Length: 100
Image (tube, rainbow, N blue to C red):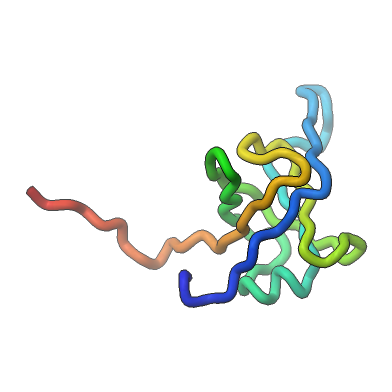
């Protein structure tokens, strides 16, 4: 995955939901052209790498967003105006085990 062009994206808005909200959970929205660049599709599970941590979220497509920006919902590892990287979850590569 490192050989793909994956520039950072700026967090335009952060949505924090409440337990009573009908739509909850980690989600990230980006433009379709940004998703295509990363080989991502709507509804796919992605990694959101923020400045403090990384976590999984579901991808949503929103072409009303400005280029280079994303909206995050219930993603704790980033704040508005910070940069994040969105990356495809790699389930095909086996985990490396260090043998002693």
